[in-house]
Length: 84
Image (cartoon, rainbow, N blue to C red; front, side, top):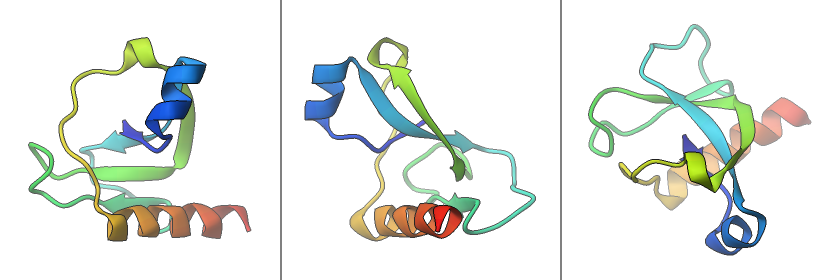
């Protein structure tokens, strides 16, 4: 999961706002998915921008990496494109 919500929200609500990540090559490209850089995860991975979820902080595992500001901006742009 790619966690989008900030730490303050996560602590106060006991949940996180997240998008699914998959290692399966996507059938559709942007804005439905965005490929993540290979250096941050153990294998090729894609964020499924259309799969936004709220999940309990208890279900979160260890951190494997993070996206940079440019990638986060692309993800937000993809979500904006899907809902506007």
